[in-house]
Image (cartoon, rainbow, N blue to C red; front, side, top):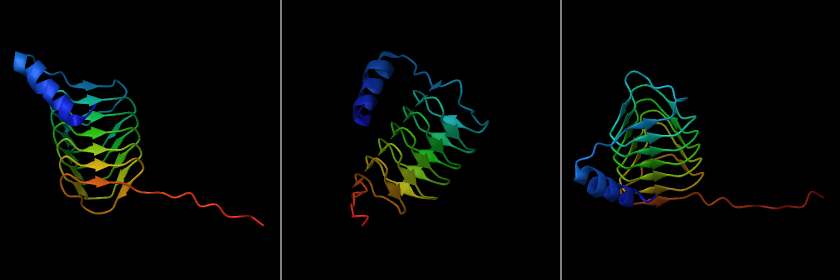
Length: 143
């Protein structure tokens, strides 16, 4: 679901009616003592969480993701399956990190951005940017 749609649903139809948002973490996820998750955060199975990780309200983390130490993630961000966010990264509000994407150490990805499937981010990304790797299949003869 689009992050802005999720934000609108939560703020208008849940919080707007005075209801509280639960934080849901799969039972197999090991949660460090210093982990902070905002209300409405959902963490699916097989996620690895390092120390000093802080997630904002309404963050959605899918299967097999690795969340590195000192990570800061803004409200309503989404991390798709098997992405790897290394230490010291910052992910802006409503940003989506694609499946199997990798964020290098201490990288910042701005708000309302999209990191494509399998993309490796080596340097900072501004707000409202789409970053994709364009792998190319190269075929050559073996003879």
